[in-house]
Image 1 (cartoon, rainbow, N blue to C red):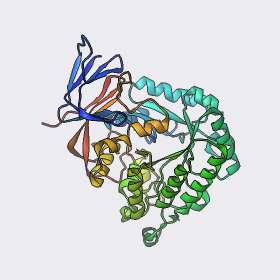
Image 2 (cartoon, one colour):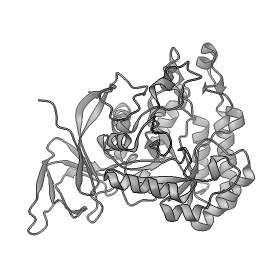
Image 3 (cartoon, helix red, strand yellow):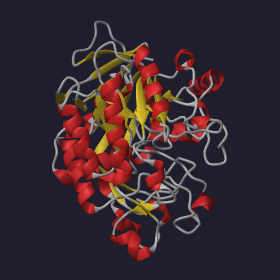
Image 4 (cartoon, rainbow, N blue to C red):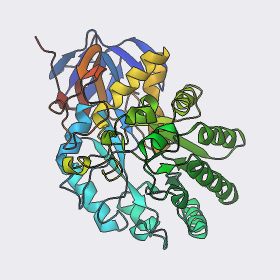
Length: 428
């Protein structure tokens, strides 16, 4: 299909473009931006007047719950949720059931995702068999099956020798290692930030040192092995300061932050709101403010949704027993725009954190609108607010700390490979 997107305010962080520009799409690609190609006859015209046209969003953490956890969510429901939120590419963590530690599982997931013809799915391969932290997976074979990075999403491995060997293996092939910096023994049985709120509510706590000890070990090993490390979901001011120093020292390291942690703190747990039971835990207000500054100064490379749909019954339990996770892929754009408005940051800078920068972290050619690039676009109304309700969410998981909140930015169109995969018209 040939598509002409006209009269939109085009924002492309990669090229620094922020101006009214038309976009011309054909054969799954962006043909030109600005001037129409010779003899271009569109099959479809999208009038983007008063709308923002930007690259499709790139999310570094979207749990699809397949294979094995379909009672929480299905591939169809979560990919529908992704494109409804303007997300056209995302990384899928390996903590499925069974984990993504075998090429056949990865190939099956990739095939299922392609058959739905929605967003691009990039599986994160398991670093160790069964994610048990004991024996390494065959990363080269997993890479051939479709994994482009490798991770251990359930916290820091207790056996540092195995972690070092994993880094060495990854370094040999040029693979990135994605790690959630939380020392398991220090975080054991904890469910909330070690602060006044946890003490008042009587909740087992996870101290900040669970993150900083893990980050320290990771950075020291990365210096020895010379491998690229990506830290998933940084949560504390102290941890952020360590990453900032490591970058200044030339360590090959990146990090992301979840949209939840940019807006919430442990104060939002209030009266045991299980929707706020996430890992890493929501930390203090000063930690939240430090994360915002870290995003602004470039220490934090990307914002992710940390999308983790949960069965409703699993959240209808006491806080400490409720299942970890919150839905978020449909909220990534809106919560990022909300951050930008509150911090008075330029829109092009804010959008970079969910387009160009996470694409660079993931190592994919996405998140930009250069001629010849895949026609993955998000077209949204920055002035339109919508209310986060159960009925408004397409994800099978309806649990989010932002239920009932009015948030900015309504996606009007999502295009993947030049196809309109989502369309929402404003209410008359």
